[in-house]
Amino acid sequence: MPDTMQAVRIHQYGDTDQLQLETIPIPQPQANEVLVRVHAVGVLPADNKTRQGFFKNFRPITFPYTPCSTFAGVIEALGANVTNFKVGQPVFGRTTNGAAAEYITASIATIAPKPDAITFAEAATISGGATTAWSALFDNANLQPDQHVLIHAAAGGVGLFAVQFAHWKGAHVTGTASAANLDFVRSLGAETVIDYNVVPFEDEVHNMDVVLDSVGDDTTSRSMVVLKPDGILVSLLGPPDQAEAQKHGIRAMNNTVITQPYPSTSLLQTIADLMASGTIKTHIAEEFSLADVRLAHQRVDTGHSRGRVILRLT
Ligand SMILES: NC(=O)c1ccc[n+]([C@@H]2O[C@H](COP(=O)([O-])OP(=O)(O)OC[C@H]3O[C@@H](n4cnc5c(N)ncnc54)[C@H](OP(=O)(O)O)[C@@H]3O)[C@@H](O)[C@H]2O)c1
Image 1 (cartoon, rainbow, N blue to C red):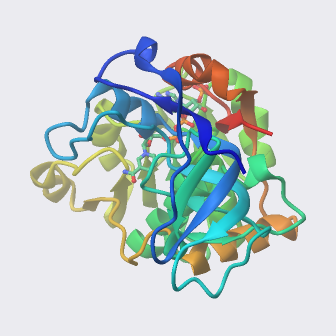
Image 2 (tube, rainbow, N blue to C red; image 1 turned 180 degrees about the vertical axis):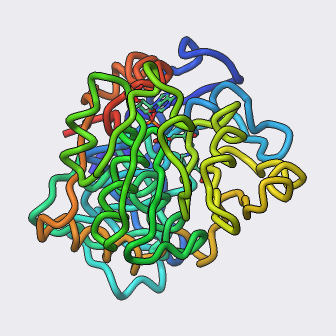
């Protein structure tokens, strides 16, 4: 193994020009960590928001900073105390140490073995997409069979999993998307898909048990009127206005992670098994090389990816 590697780093908050490909030492895995040779990295909207400094007041970062957190790769070395993973094992999951690099370290609490039946790129779409959809629908909203759920941004990296999980649970799914994604969202199991550019969703949808909002702004308040009394709005974009929720007689919450660590090995494994069996599928919006990380971030910044943008290293 070489001593150095290529890694993406930023030295200050800013636009995609801040993303630099640099040569730095390969990190050492600490206790309860593994060193992973990275094959694929998911680029989340949160990675772009972090780069731009949106979270700097409550989640400041230390520079130089390597962006991205969701990955898949092969274990290269084990830190102290690691007995449940082995060198050469394909894994995927989340790291807080920066994923956009040739080698990364990750806690064993937030990774899982990658099934052979899914690719590294597919596995890199699970954390931050599928895990978020799962916890919002099943932990926060406690979605039940036969309930009616509205899923906004149903073609996105979270939404595409949310539609499938809700359908798999036996709920009736309505999704919102633009014209180019209507058939795609239907293919995921949505009974109704609304083109948000053509018709206000609140004209079409009523008496929902649950709304999953990953769009925010006025979509959050407009979603409150489509819920039945005591229905649940789960927002991925910050705490909804409680006075407004009370006025509509609904419950509104920010998505909160109930299990720690998050995502847990068992949640990652559950979702990967559903994908490996063909029950749930993912979608790669586009793959970029590590050298093209700026293009990848620009693609995510459009806000109109179908599925997840991936950095592909091998
Ligand atoms: N709090 C958390 O834990 C958490 C976790 C994950 C994500 N998030 C946030 O949730 C948001 C979505 O994440 P993501 O990964 O799903 O993003 P994404 O993959 O970038 O979502 C893109 C999708 O959004 C759709 N879209 C854009 N504007 C829309 C609108 N007005 N109505 C309906 N759909 C619209 C697009 O569909 P069209 O191309 O058809 O327009 C596209 O398919 C992001 O802001 C992210 O930061 C929060």
